[in-house]
Image (tube, rainbow, N blue to C red):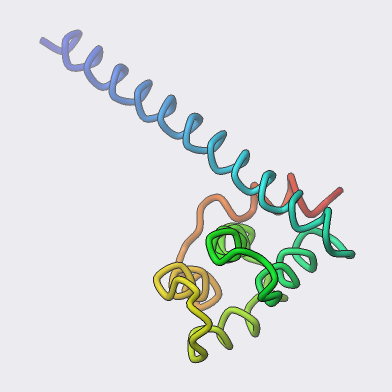
Length: 123
């Protein structure tokens, strides 16, 4: 009986690790993709380029929303004033993504933020 429970727990833990790794890879690729698009248009580091990308109405709304999401994932405080500004303005940006991103600055946990900062902001 104990061996069966141990196998089930090991399988559950293994599944959790696989899902965590796959979701991490997906998030990494998404952040890299949108931040490279921003860097191709704007100067500075990834966060500065993403902020400019969000603020430019020349960019597609869908892509600006992806940049908002990426800024939330990175959790860099430089993005906070811009994201909070767009919560009250109405340029058609996704308010749900804005609220989520701003919450990360208000103490909500983003377990990935330190990982993304170490990968993207130490370049």
